[in-house]
Length: 164
Image 1 (cartoon, rainbow, N blue to C red):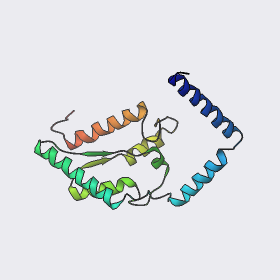
Image 2: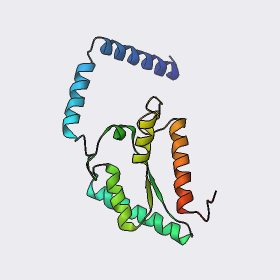
Image 3: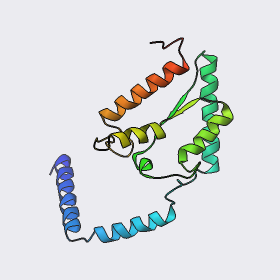
Image 4: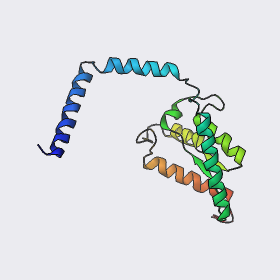
């Protein structure tokens, strides 16, 4: 059997077995037990903390990007996007993983746009729309909203460049 046919056959066989396991709840029970263990480890109002080493590396790279932008006469600005699952949660102040990034941005005096609240509010206004394709990627309505939001925000930040 050619390799491509083996791959197709294996995908079909694996899918068939998974469907049987789901149908008879063979896979469902262990998976749900695993998810409940994961859920107990995390808080509903706080994301896991990023390690100190990763925070420091992020700070170093952001500083390098900011300095490179300055050397080239450009302003460096960071746009922070929320994951879909984050929009379903209520966070304590500073509880999002992005808040760790925001702390670094403040310390380096790097401007940013945090889209968490604007996207969350937009979804509340149109809950029947499908905003996310998966956890991170948006459908057309999300891209349109973010583009319009950033165009409005940037026209206020840079009126001499983006005057209407």
